Image (cartoon, rainbow, N blue to C red; front, side, top):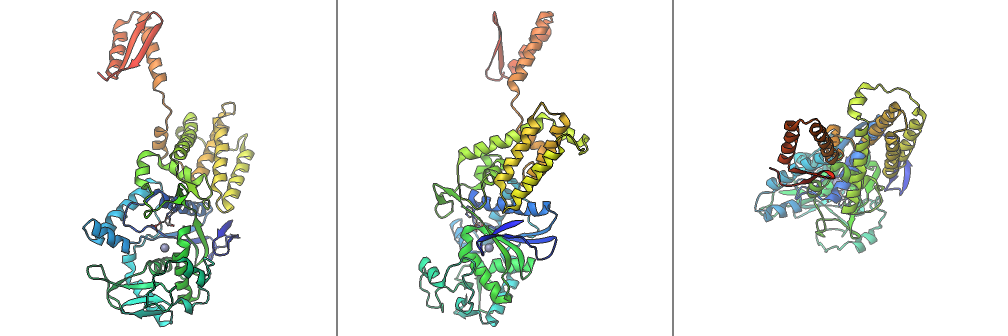
Length: 469
Ligand code: AMP
Ligand code: ZN
């Protein structure tokens, strides 16, 4: 299995630290608002990474934090005229609801920053003791100059970072690249007691502490969107190196942006749609399909047309399963070898090869459609169509499709209403021919109650839709 490692800028063979196990940390949301559909790209992709490792038989420990204390949460609390607790609780609940609605599995551990405050304080104290942190008037900073490897994740040299960043000169810092580990609280802000006085932790410290707490000093994969490479992940890595001389994680994976007119979808640019809003209009698996039909490192432009197209594609898969009455038949069908077994095995191998090649989900989806064609092929034996459907569901599930199958099958059921009306009218005609006037009148009246008006004309029966009676 090959993964593109941001740190080395190449695809590398995945070798787990402990055979058969994989530890993954994904940066979670800062809960100051509803998350947007760009964030959903990251959350959905990590969910697929986790599902694929599980499918491959790994025991996965998947940790995703919730950042529940941050400047933005405090600002939002002031705006909503409430406490930071209320804001964090409200949007944590919304995050859990919306990720569940997107079909994202719950992480193995989902720590909140405020729950690990003692660990955070102990960690900063350890950095201070090792000479990598210094405090000035209640703020604590990381001394980047003390760490020769600083910048090794993003590949930015110290001078570039300074030129690139709009650094407001802070006279308390020993070096402009130094970052905050602990921030002194201002009056009215939420604070925790610490050896440096009352204050709260910096974001980079929260994540490094939570990842280490649940996954150990070094783990397999650290994920996030590309905006997090610098400074967030660079600074997490710096703290880890300073703390234990270990590089935090062996692989760093970063997803590309969801853009709007070529610009990153983001809260600050106000060019976003919440996942909640998009979910109100489109099916969750269509949203998933929209993202996964492109490689995770490529940028994607937000497009309602493409989400609608994705919805038609997903409907097409479900319609094939309906056509062979999948749910009923699959229970009665042992997975037997049949005529197409070799072809299915080949498609299976192609699928695995695609996923093993740095999660080529676009190629994996094209293989789902090859299977779909086999399911739809009415000239094949039914057992072969059913076997193709089983393979389709098995491989599609790795990408998170075919969840709540029963509900989805009815959502995507083809519209049969016209055919059904014609069928009922044919029974009415038959009853008229047999002079069963009570039956034919009853059919007419019952249809009228549903808003279907019928007229007998010399050319036959005509119907149209009216108000329900
Ligand atoms: P945040 O709450 O801003 O820390 O973001 C949560 C996750 O979403 C992080 O992994 C971000 O890198 C990712 N993210 C933020 N904006 C986008 C975007 N427009 N497209 C893809 N991923 C994003
Ligand atoms: Zn993080």
